[in-house]
Image 1 (cartoon, helix red, strand yellow):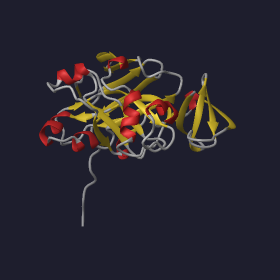
Image 2: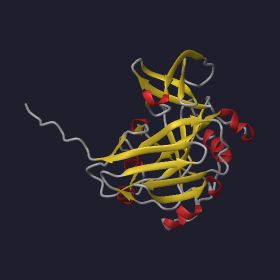
Image 3: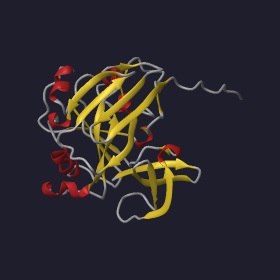
Image 4: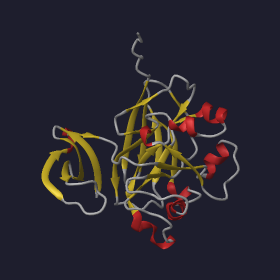
Length: 260
């Protein structure tokens, strides 16, 4: 199935895509849910980020070619960091280029969406805790990452966590093509089979560190080819069997004039 979160005249709701239609469901797709009977044309709804996570757990340095690209040693265990939920945007939303940033990069990543509460899970049961997979863009203010020596500011700006356009449970994450394009020019092109630590390792490992909640996203890392984006650019994250997450890069809105 392909699960979506969307906005229509009736407000925000969840649904499943069947052909060119959205079948509305009565609750978020965690645990028990059922179709309501309401059917909407896919082209008539505005797709939102398919989940509203409590946290986004990101994995750094998880492709050997990207690790070499930034002149870093290969990790001997996953390098974890968090992005705030306030960074989440959906397909078609704008990535805002911060005023304090001098270079903002795209990072194409496979996103794993947690389906039920996971803590200290057995290695052979990791799939039981997964709702499905989605596209993720780990947007990064690259020079701030180097300047700060840790990654919170560089990775944590509002709009720096595009996710979508939906969640699918119809793919295996083991060997999917993953690509990032800017204005139609391919910048990153790899396969998830090149991950140093695959989802089968990451999910149990992370669950031994922190409790994963339904809707949380694990961003599994990016391949080589990271590059800067500019205001006005269009960035596409394409993952085989999942779809395309498209966002525009925009300048900050002018601040309202202050006054006493």
